[in-house]
Image (tube, rainbow, N blue to C red; front, top):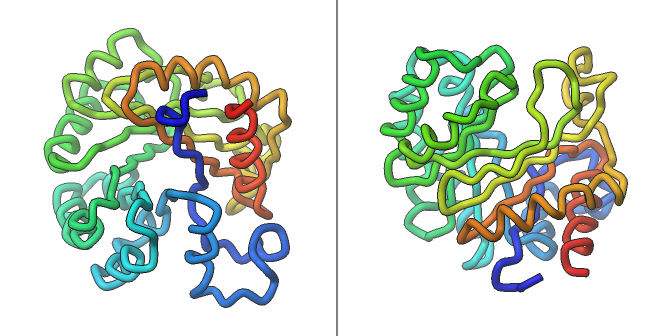
Length: 260
């Protein structure tokens, strides 16, 4: 594969205590995890912002502790995707907090992951349009859980918003999205959540993401990935199957598969 078009492959989050012994050395100080992570990956998804909008000082530290070419995708707060009451205010606060990262050229986009209950309706499409306006100036990526969004008109709608579409790998359960290769902006995006069918609906905490992909399961994506790369300037691939460092293993494995 052309190295100039090779995707950025990394993980969703990095500061997991249960990665000790699997990825991080057992006794590595928690405040050294990011530096260690940067030795192996050139980007990361920041997920903690979903639970709490970070302070600008924390973002400043993240920016300063990473290499000049390191890339961040930051998940928007749950106010935007799940509560949906004070969206404009939440996004304004997040954008303010991310200013140091933006100024350093390391903020590459915002990820808005909507819940299964967020279905394809006229009201919700209007909400996406408003959100895209609030995020103007920063690449924005929408991810869905409910398969009502799998409609022929959606890619054109996303293009009209200037928003990116997140392709996902997740259990093939009724109502969830199938694997896709949709591109609606200059950037491709894929997230691997694992295929833990048993725990997807009933699991507690991160149990639904407790899954290790096989080589064949990853290889089944190579055709889609190549098609996405062909249509984009840059493609991001993140592994969210994080329990016990499985995301690290599969990210490395997919990179090796694509390099062959």
